[in-house]
Image 1 (cartoon, rainbow, N blue to C red):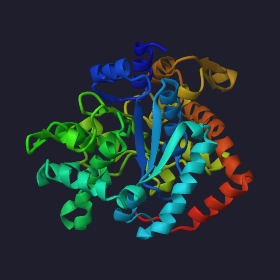
Image 2: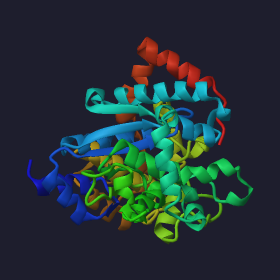
Image 3: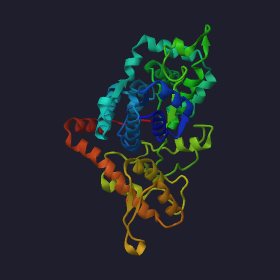
Image 4: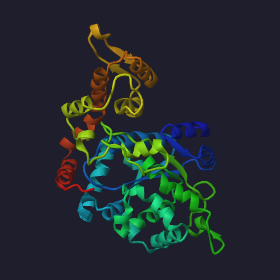
Length: 379
């Protein structure tokens, strides 16, 4: 596969790429660069983690990118997920791995890492402190929204370690690409900003033993889209990002803590249809429409066509071969919201059903599911 084809494959999963030129340079010098994403294990898997993320990882693997999945157990502990019970958090991490396996990711091509192993490594903490010496408290505060915490003044001091630790992860793992969601962009940008800061006359990336990775000592950033919840927040939330588009995307992202606006991989076909039918989807409105978002970001990544079945008196069954066709018909009122919702629920279930069935039939997966389901989810 040539360089431009690889670049286009990676661009297809990135809502923001910093920078495309660096991505191209990376592929010109490294046939198999390494990317990573990190996850705080907690609660049951939902659409973004169990369906959308695997679709994106498959594209990266297709481009020849090696991928690392970081189970951020110690971050979940700091963030008080699952009541801060590290054993429960670790079990949730095992469950996540089973979810990705059930979703069709070839786990033999993916390296799974546990953050606790970094936590116990003195060299990791050396990197954390070097990074902390290289940026200000103001910059730390700007990046704190990565932990989903806006009111930092009243939060535990431990949260202030979060940005320096996550930045250290990038250099400690020696990854070339940070391939995380838009909600992680601030800390990833921090990693690029400080790479060439000098301590005692030596660039930080060299002190962090990152030479030969990324592009000129800086990681390439590929931030993927944030799937929205089924309904918008009741009130506008500000402070996640200075860019209003990114701020809205982060504030509206699908959250496991809001089960009625969230689709889980264990939801039945009936539950999926019920939830989607109640989704925000005003007629002829394309902007900020979560149902259309799922069609664009999930269904057309997994399927080549999208069929809407309806009675002849309402226009009859129609098959679309691109998202643009669907958007046009919906905007013009030729596609009714209910017809769109019913078809979308059907296709989502086609993707979720094999995962759901894996957890119903596989004994190990079933036990993990029962354990995680029994845990009290905290936020």
